Length: 505
Image (cartoon, rainbow, N blue to C red; front, top):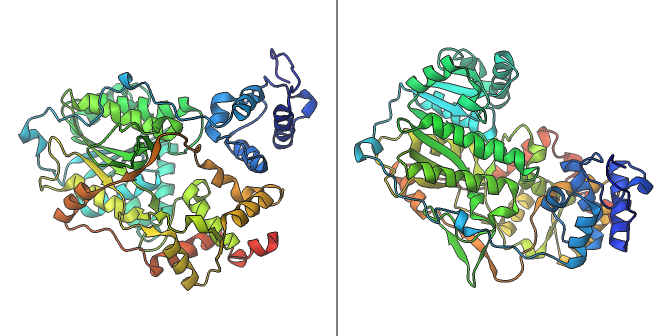
């Protein structure tokens, strides 16, 4: 029991069940857990939340990861459960100054300023999955000097972090890239959310004088957690970047297609295009999405005051197209965890077969972004400065399943009841619960007058055609590379492919 919290025993069946589950997950005696004790102060964290959600699947409760971060106690969580599923509440729209992206307030000559292939670029997020590939493209397709702002306890740790990322992602080019350190790659230790980006006055002044292009790709990208951390990493850091950019640099901001939300208020389907921003979508339901939505809003404020910025809303980043490599922390990727479950258990729900699946290979996405950044063709203008960077050539899940079957994967289509029964069975098996934890990341079910949001990228496709860029076809060769990487990285066991459904019967 926590200090300064009065112990109150569970008062109803829901609270009693929650106490039992928390006790099992947190390793705390049930007799010491009161209804006002805080989940996190008892030792809970994000993975423990997912454990509890798996254990409550059989209850049919509409409780999400977000609920745990916001409600935190058995009393409040039980109250939500007993009151039924909540309906999405519309955000306080007066706080949203820009419902649509504003027009840029800069001179035409400045808008169409030629990109200098020998200029100096500031890149944030260079150790991340997309960021490291943006660095690759800058090194391979331009003569720029790239200043990579990396957070570390000191300069040495910052350098080690970037070098390790280069080595992990580009084994074949690592020697070449390592030789460019302090020639074209300059590693700067800093903290984006701190004043002057965490740099001393002299370094900040030098960068401020020499940098003309900023590519801000750094972000906290998990879809669950304490919002304060996301606000600091994704909103506060962006504000510091905007201060640095001011009115004499161009900012290229990496956002996410997720700012569209999954659902929007209305009687018919909502379409989210490049020149859309607030369409009454449920952006507040996910801490990551909320922070990126509010970051875009900060950019719109700056643009209305003369800042020159482009926004690149990135889709579902997947394995590299040419060799299938994925990110270092693949276990944290919800999409890859869903693929793993389907391949590992060899099952898919019948109702999901018509759903669309997006694969946006990271190497193609980074190439497209840098080609847009460095193009001296007039790609953007005062109205069109947002790009939807995702592979619009989506596949239906049934086609993905068909390709996996051609590769040799055994996948059985289950009706929804069978699928739900399998999930429940796994949730009750202590040895298998971990297999479905990442599937718990999905948000709350929408009720009432809410329709799904459909994404649109037609304007971006036309811009990409101008620079001769095309998204790749997702075919058997690519998906075979995806599966092989999942196996070679240890994320998926070849021996268990399609086997676990039989084991659980």
